[in-house]
Amino acid sequence: MIQTQAILFPGQGAQSAGMGRDFAERFPEAKATFEEADGALGFALSDACWNRGDEVNRTDIAQPGIYTTSVAVVRVLEARGLDRRQLAFVAGLSLGEYTALWCAGALDFVDGLRLVRLRGEAMQDASTAKPSSMTSLMGATEEQARALAAHAAAHGICQVANLNGPGQVILSGELSALDVAEAAAKDFGIRRTRRLVVAGGFHSECMRPAAERLARALVEVPIRAPQVPFASNVTGELSSDPDAIRRQLADQVCSSVLWEKSMRLALAQGVKTFLEPAPGEVLAGILRKIDESASILSIARPEQVPA
Image (cartoon, rainbow, N blue to C red; front, side, top):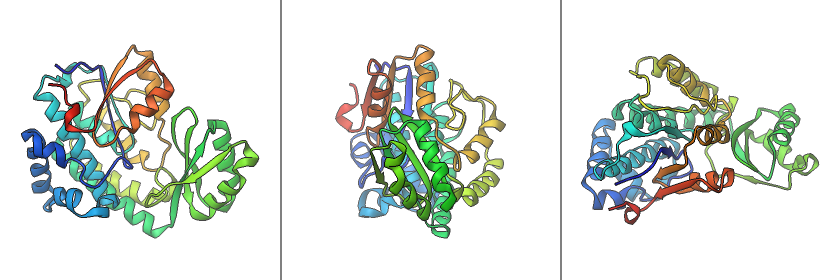
């Protein structure tokens, strides 16, 4: 029996070549999920994730691939006793919000899959149109990060993109502005920076064309009220109204991800046990930095699936 109060879903950056294949080879529920995804998208997403090397890092492949992998793992767990309706909390980091909404019963699997495929394409197109990236600020506070972003914004778009946890802050923006931010970081008390290997400046105004494209698509997709508490990246608070969720999903592409705020909300509501499905184990590490007493189970490999 799977014992957890909350499920946290990974976002882009968690992908790796071959993700989901080991689950699909071992569990029929995972295999069926990838077959459903291949059929819904009209191309072999499974082949792109499993057999084409670095292609899995393309935004338009990584996003549906991560989503499908996470859904596949949850379906494996459901077959072994997990009841999604009994969860006290769900959340997802960026792209992971779509998986969280599926888990909460707000979004059908295929509708979510097609949305994240479109989202990935739109974000890739926006990245091509405006050269941009993201920079991690090691040990920075929110105040330091916002001051540095304001300084660099004189040279182009520069925003705080992610407030993931203590000392885990990410800036996003145009390359010219990030160059200035990195050069000035020590003047703002930030000891080190690291340019991330990403396609573009996600969660900044660099993604405005993608947000507008996604907003148009979201109008056409049925979204229901979540059946379990769902936290929004945009607000760091619970969100249950379908129209508000639509707006937040579109806004999220250009807005800061308030992950730490979301996790502190869950903890304040008494959630003590968390589960993170594949791919990756990034969210477990972040949560332990927020509250080392929290219990989180990562299911990144088939052998981690409880009997």
